[in-house]
Amino acid sequence: MKLCMVGTGYVGLVSGACFAETGQSVVCADIDPKKIQVLNEGGIPIFEPGLDAIVARNVEQGRLSFTSDVPAAIREATAVFCAVGTPPRADGGADLSAVDAVAKTVAENCQREMVLVLKSTVPVGTNARVRRIVKDAPFPIHVVSNPEFLKEGDAVGDFLRPDRIVVGCDADDAFAKQIMSRLYHPVSLDKDRIVWMDPASAELTKYVSNTMLAMRISFMNEIALLCERVGADIHAVRFGVGSDDRIGPKFLYAGPGYGGSCFPKDVKALVHTGRDHGLELELAATTDRVNDRQKGVLFRKLKSHFTDLRGKRIAVWGVSFKPKTDDIREAPALTLIDALLADGAEVVAHDPEAEENAKKLYGDRIRFVEKAYEAAEGADALCLLTEWRQYQNPDFERLKSIMRQPVLLDGRNIWSSYGLRAQGFTYDGIGVQST
Image (cartoon, helix red, strand yellow):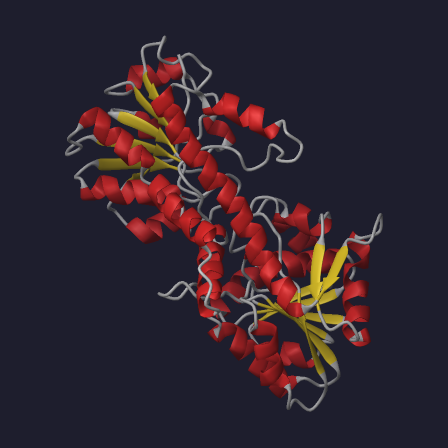
């Protein structure tokens, strides 16, 4: 079976490479010729641990290739995966123009009965919308909803070792079920991981999953602020709450707010979907507002300490929205940097992977350095935004000797147990009572 993956971003490239790893013949297609050129020259346009090795291995074995000729790739395929972006519109809804374009191209170029798989995150009703677009194609096109659940930084593992595979198609669509079962059989050998459902439920499942996780984060961030007011410690609260097996320990960590390409966009899209159907999803809407407020928490702490930030040099460790990725979309660090620049501060930043993406955004308005300690030299404060492993246990004596003022703002509570106040630092985390 030949597969065509339309879109070579995080979802498309990882999914295409991993399908090839299971033995499928995959062509990854994209309308951006520069991306395809990078891939054909052996480069990887994104940072994702383990992806480079899988891509190289499958290209060498002839199972994976790349093209900017999307129609030609579709003509050869039995299954086409739509993995294009669905960025938020100004009103919070999803922009489906790229999805529509893929559907039209598939309808115009299909050469056989085939499956069109919607891998992109799309609102309820998109499957039906795409069916209307492809209904007059010369061959039957079975439209399937198959949302992705890939964590940036561990996307390869999530694809090859999934906890579940959500597939939405008609209950009586034997052709689509056969194709999807075969494609995912290699990653379901120990047990059947496919969760079959109708398309609308599959579309909604993705938004609900991400919103529920975002909700846990926002709730714990609010509780962290309450901990600071009442003298409690968010670590103790987290352990106590997470020990209840009805709740569990995941996504209970306080911090500077969530970011990335999924949570912010998907929460907004779910709220918009509710409003489209005359329903105000109040918990989801509040989750989004709480997160926007939380992204300013470190700036407010800096203002409380310094009052006037004009001329102050602030070091920022970590610009990506999470470790093990170069993705800076909606990253809390950007909110802090923007506020610092607006207040007249000088920003010196370090990130092991996201520097180039951040430079595209900020140009020479902030200074990036090659080594983490360089950012702290002469700094009035050091802010930890991303918990990269190399930041988790630094040489604090060295930091104190090179900083202008020993002020540490720990947005991830990584340093809260190190007794930094006793070592002469002004230390502040998120909802922690540290020494």
